[in-house]
Image (cartoon, rainbow, N blue to C red; front, side, top):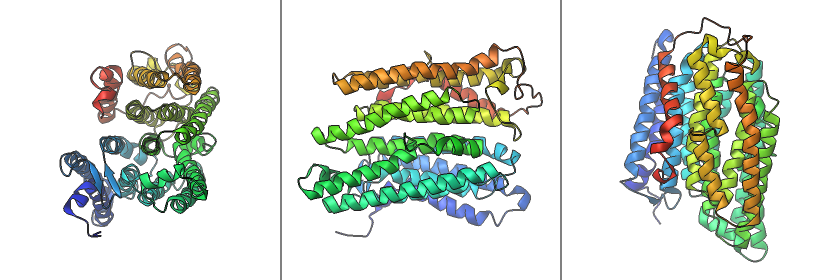
Length: 480
């Protein structure tokens, strides 16, 4: 076996190499530009880096094509390419949205741009890795960059607190994952994805090692996906982080963890033992969607509401994954990521670096800012699954897949998902009710000097158009 990478190996990871290369270059460039213009060259360089990575990702599908590379350490498949595409799109939208709002908080530091690119590279290694060591390295690249991004507002106590809480719990979960990898290796003699998971079905004590290892590894993945009972960090971190960073974490960050869950369950062989793991994660999914929606009912702060909502949405997706929904879960991830980016972009706009956006604060928003109220209502109705918006179709496709099986457990998951969708409709509808049906003007809605931001307005318009009619042209079958 040759340890020298071939040209195909290097081309297969060329998107990650571009992102890391541009990130390192931007660390040098920040010392070469005048202080008053330090963010503009870095912004241009980062945008070009992401666009270059997108082109390289598209190119890899033709040459070298799908397959295993670096001695089966890296896997290229339609699933991993689409997941990487989600991260890059989320990263590009974040670059278009975040700088003005971070500047309002005086937290647009030059380090933001390389950290974002390293984050994206880590996400791509996380879901493209075909070896548990590569997956873990990708996770740590992503996590370390995200810890720093969350705590970047050094003058904000809540930002520092959320960063510390995420760091402590995140490193604890990483320890679970690393110990799980050690047990998986002990049970199978390999860290390769297929070989390590095949150890779950061996006889004797080796199988016990593999089962314990996979369980520990799933604990770490569940933490990153914010599944109950590993969700406690979510509301505080979502609220404490700068809102554009929260949007990036809730879209690309969440997609990477759930994308890894799709990859893992695609490699679990069928059979009684495989079904038991799916039942376990299905129970966690059911509890997550129920707990997330119930607690979200009483939230006033929109960021905390979306945090608990994200727990419930992770539950929906994992419920689908455990029932064999690959395409449907990927489609849900793609749409949900864009919805999160749009929602947090509008919340950032309403905050203006001064306000906390609450349910009561947006009362009568339609009178003062009609287009903002319309966009916000449209996005939250899409979250709720209001037809014919895209959120309705994502849930419909996912629930149809769950309903295909006659198994009692699948029926329970189906009933739980439908019931929880009805519960979620209540708190999502509060946004429209407050914006259009309240006479008194809330604190946020009453701010008359909101600046005109054409770039943000155009971006939100395009996203809103996609949420309204995108399902006509873009359905799960278009993904793989």
